[in-house]
Length: 143
Image 1 (cartoon, one colour):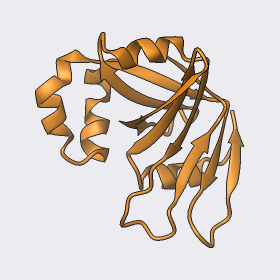
Image 2 (tube, rainbow, N blue to C red; image 1 turned 180 degrees about the horizontal axis):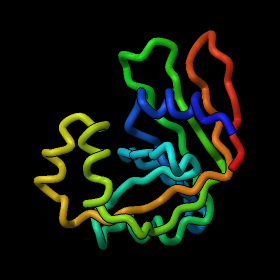
Image 3 (cartoon, one colour; image 1 turned 120 degrees about the vertical axis):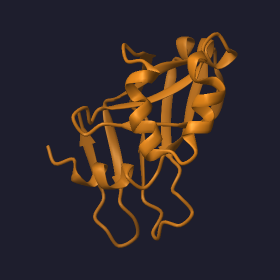
Image 4 (cartoon, rainbow, N blue to C red; image 1 turned 60 degrees about the vertical axis):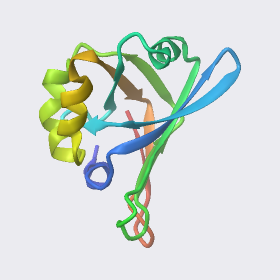
């Protein structure tokens, strides 16, 4: 599978709009994410342990997302998926911190304020639609 388009687009953004449906009620949250080339079917994000969002993640019956293009990116490259499962991760924030620091501006401030309170979640992708921007070929990757 050629993941080069996915790799290129994930370099251009660090936020997703994460849509959840729990007990017939929809909700959308903006979260920072990280992605690793050696696990192309997984996005990682974190949430404060024990908050209402964490419970919502545990109970979500339907999950989808779209990445939020950076405002300085020409053509609005993005990824999205409607075929997503959410689960607690075996990875810790200590495992992911170097990637967060590399891809999310000013993340050190977040880490300094709430780092020990964060727990990691995984978004497992059944497929992902990749739009590298206006004038470029789009693709759907299936995992």
